[in-house]
Amino acid sequence: MLRITIFIRLIFEVIALQRISSVQPMRTPKTADFGFSFYAPYEAAVETAFLALCAARMQLEEEHTPFAVRSMTFRLKSPASIREKLLRRGLPQNAQGAASLHDVAGLRVVLSSVEAVYHFADILRASTAWQFVCARDYIAAPKKSGYRGLHLVMLVPVCENGQNASVPVEIQLRTPAMDMWACVEHDLCYKPVKEA
Image: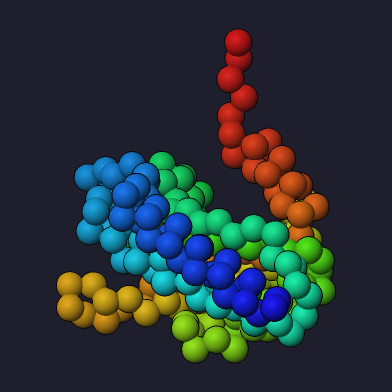
């Protein structure tokens, strides 16, 4: 019965993802240097990776804990955010510089426990949907700010203009407490305070 429930939930997520991507394309503002041609492969990679995450979630819930995945979200980094990161790293603020970033396309999965985070990471590393590149374990070694999470970088195969390409995607795995801390930290560190 649980397997049927999980399968039905996966079907609804696929339908929802198709509606989102066909009716409301990802709303990343396009600019001259980061236009449609720049974002198209990242959009395709995020959609492909999201479906692979849905399949991995089914596997996790069969093997580990039902309903261990609390939420799954995705985003594309905005042109302003890409430029800021390239400036901090001393790289050219254009598409060539952005090619060195692994987090233009990002997905976040919030899981019920640290144990579920590591188990899910093992499932993702073993998946044939992508090629595992590297992991940064901020759970075992938190950042100075106190941020914790497990980041995986994957190369996702996409077809662009009839040619195969591998696009880097960063997947962040966190518990609800880690996610709350990350949201507060992000607002404090990256969002300027506006005076009234």
